[in-house]
Length: 287
Length: 55
Image: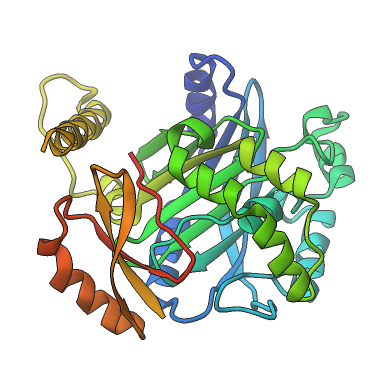
């Protein structure tokens, strides 16, 4: 259960970050599901839909609290994920009925590989919501959720040596928030072009090959321009699942004086880890 | 087929150390090859795929 108070707090904090309008929130149940599915993914990619509610004020919070696992019907399930269209239709019916407001595609990789360009395209065009149902629910014309305008997040869970959660969205700077009981882990998205230059270059370089491969598989590929545009305007967050679980676990406590201890301590731990990581990187570069 | 890759801090790219057939073999190879990789960052990927280093 996500409290109104938590939504308001996230909304307030988001207002302090210029340009931040979208928050993708996942509950501990979703994180646990990610951990489990990462462990069992072997040979073929698996996946499904995350389902949740919208909360709109200054920010648009996509609160994912439920999931449904969906069969992979890709002709090459070892290297790609295509959700069963029958299941997608059923999920769309749930949006129409107002049982959920919004969905997102999630899928797994059995190894440590990060998102591919088809992963980015499939999230961009997923549009897992019903615009009319949202307008009815919120009682106004939701311009920000108009098809083609709404942020469409995708989630990837890798099951390799370092299981990692990736969240990505086209043309949308966002914050990923994971919540468990009374604490929360947040990550601000980075721009693929600048934050992961080498991965961006690989995706751009291989775009033509990807289009050709999809055609051979009998899939309808995006045109090259759309693919390039999608890669160029991707925002993402990557966080190792072990780190996420650790930060969300109730055992993680650092005693500090004063009342606000717990949350400040977590932020301090994250900052210290970040500094250590940068220092190690710096020293390795000097070697 | 999985490739065991090591992050080369100098080249700022992934270098393939070994190829194995199964995920179990890949996990074992990652443990075994950790010391051969200067950065200590060893992962396994399907052929044609690459990991991403997150901050």
